[in-house]
Image (tube, rainbow, N blue to C red; front, side, top):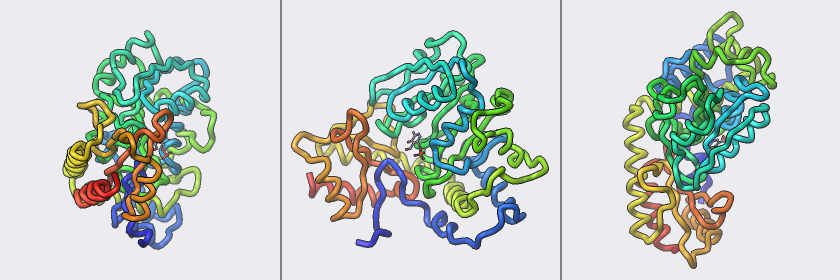
Length: 358
Ligand code: PLP
């Protein structure tokens, strides 16, 4: 089977939107070419629409989602700053590690995997933190946590939200929820290849940006000169031109469809997948009411060989699904339905294949 026939139903990357693939082949332009700068400006406008924000400092970082996490922390955290982070899976844990490397004094609040972060417990964890961090959509467990309550009650703290697996797939409301810093990745519900990290920073958070962050590449003081169009109008490095063309096109596909329609398409696929898997006898892993439509997690039934089934799905049907992480390796499957992959035809094909294999 041709590699181009692969159906990517793992936790990401998904199959990119055809327009995003085609855009990778656009003629190369110089990174200061006015044509390119126009496309970059338009990309940032499109990102503001998808993020639902008016934040001026909204742009794609030239690296993957993890760099989005790091840029948000390294620019506002100084050694000794109090930071509270909710951890209900791998990526909350990664946020703790990055914050600690910035020298933060981290209060880590753990929740059982498969459960959401409880906003009240996070808010009660420290009397006056500089920053509260949380993962909106935990890709290791398929769980959505509530953000609005944190934003409404954060006090003077900055609210940092990981939207890597949520942006473009489920509602994200940066301004309405009072989020100060957020980052995403291109390879999930935005339907583009991996390689960029869309980031948005509120005007309030910009006042906390330190003069000399402990990273040159991720220094927002240098990069924001471009974003605000102050003089130089360039990233402080060579922009990844082709990836920005591709993100521009992927966002175009989402906005042409209508953001709400894209959410609805993810919702429809997730609902059908959960229903079909339950009919096949699978037990859903994430707690009800917080299940992500774009990432369904199920317990691997007794007697089913995790590795054999996943490898036969790939070799016989060209379908990739993801295994569990950490303590759930071999015990849980993570089935993505993101971006261009979120089509009912893909869901039905996977369910039919699983009927043969388990
Ligand atoms: N945060 C979440 C919730 C993720 O799912 C991922 C990647 O899967 C990341 C952060 C890191 O993103 P990347 O792998 O693009 O660096």
